[in-house]
Image (tube, rainbow, N blue to C red; front, top):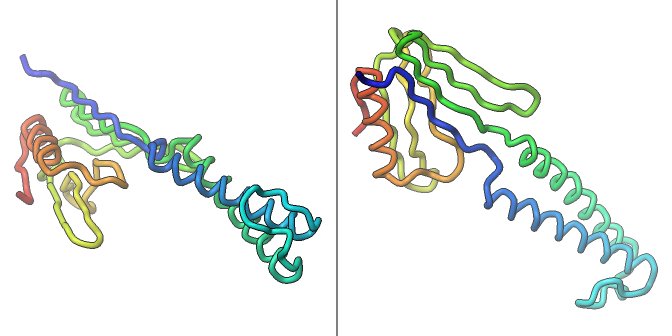
Length: 178
């Protein structure tokens, strides 16, 4: 007897690359803040360079504004990472006849239910170049294609093909795009 349920977890924004970017923005913002304070106080608070030699107006003031912008951006990045925006799952339940796509949004969870009978095909999309796109999506009658893969780092081609073929076999529909 074949399995009646297939569940695929989807990775969200809690990835090493996002954590490293948030960390760099945070450290850069702190550096700009110390440069601004050094300029204002006339003492070097940073071990590198000589920020106390900067004239507070306009250079130290601009450094302070850069630190404020970095603090706001870092706060947003850390919030997105903490909430893990984009994480969720794709749940294919043949016994209930429904596909449930759920993701964690910034403010609230997002959940879409699609009857399996409305699924026409599994589509594998590969577009290389400057704006690379590699994704698996569902072609649904009366709706736009529903993407199933995570946003961000593109999947390896072999993994993408394998995931698409496995899903098409499970749902009993055609595989498009290869």
